[in-house]
Length: 114
Length: 110
Image 1 (tube, rainbow over the protein chains, first blue to last red):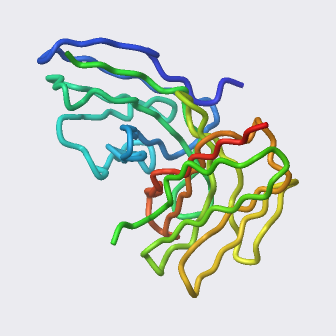
Image 2: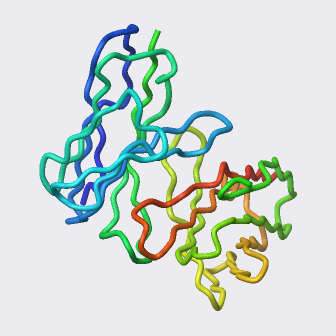
């Protein structure tokens, strides 16, 4: 049982390049999330998908787009990377929103934008 | 006031000591509370949920104080392997998102 799988683990981009971070979960969870983590800032929510077919902005959505491809997969796209997007990105899932279910995290993607 | 506030530490304690962290939250409608543990350069992992009546899991005890709007984590008989950053997390019953504190760093030494 893999849980939440993120790819790639590491990526270096030049300013202006684009890329997509992939996330898949095999726990049949309805809700999926993308967070970024920067030193001293804690985890900040970028986008989330409460259920298949829906996506909503979180705290820091600017510069990102997401796609909930199906129940398993939730991708994060950077259309034109900026150095301010250098961060560690975590994908997470939970069974559903609106209850006390915790988040399950992937291993993270370390992104550097030069 | 931040939604969630945690003392960043670090808390440096000797092995075997008891240590406690608090986390204050600002939204009185909060219903879900968790403690996560995060090791350096790793993903956060669920340590325990926090229930209204308080709960215990081995050496770890979590408490919720709704009147003062804080949750606490008590670690007894600290081990070297407990060295990590501890994140408090909260959410409201109907909200889709969970809010994270910035974490409290614990260093257990010999």
